[in-house]
Length: 341
Image (cartoon, rainbow, N blue to C red; front, side, top):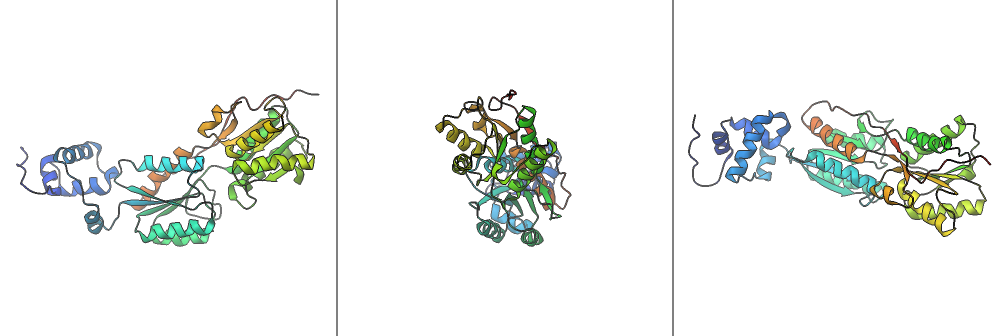
């Protein structure tokens, strides 16, 4: 069957259906929920739209289908490499789905996180992805009653909703065990904020690994930072004032590992000859440090991509298929075998 000739004037969905030899409803599904359309039909429709220069009217689509075709993303802090990698993963996951992201930044403040989430809800997003943050589970539950909502990059043991995260207890234990396996027993931990769920889990993992190895840990072995480099530099000064001997440092994230290394350098304490150092996240800069940083890789982009797939499934009334994500040790030159003395 030959397609009917095009009429003059604005291109319509019916025109596309005629040219692509599909139904009008198929074209509508490609525009609103492309992943549920068979690949061959989807590609044919999209090729036809490109051929005809069709640009869908977003407002009309929203009014017709009851959707804005937008996904709200609230990140804990724009400019933090790990959280940015999760955002990038979400955007990559949304690419080609017909959904567009709208990003809000909480700037590491709980009240701003909740405000940003509510603002995005007010813009009629179809779903909400919360990256980390520390707003209470009951507040997240309230958001989930309005729109499909999931939490990524934050463990939520007290919430029954959709949650994509790595195990921070295991991350802390793995980082500490790596240092123990390299012969270190005098290990200190530069933790994140005392009330931050990720920091709490990593500190618990540190204590557990040390206990399992029969190594005593006192409060002097732990200094709380804030996940920023400056706080780790201050932590090195605090350890010096305490007079705590150590041959290895477990920093709760790579940013603090960077700060710790600079502070050590200024004290003419050299990594790894005198002190071994391990971080968490495997930021792109980690392998370019001198020496390259040993770290625990957090799969930020993979988390974001999984979150994008999951939120679309939830919007379409389905059950998301959640991945199991681990934290692998990336061994580089900043950790050195400790020789017995």
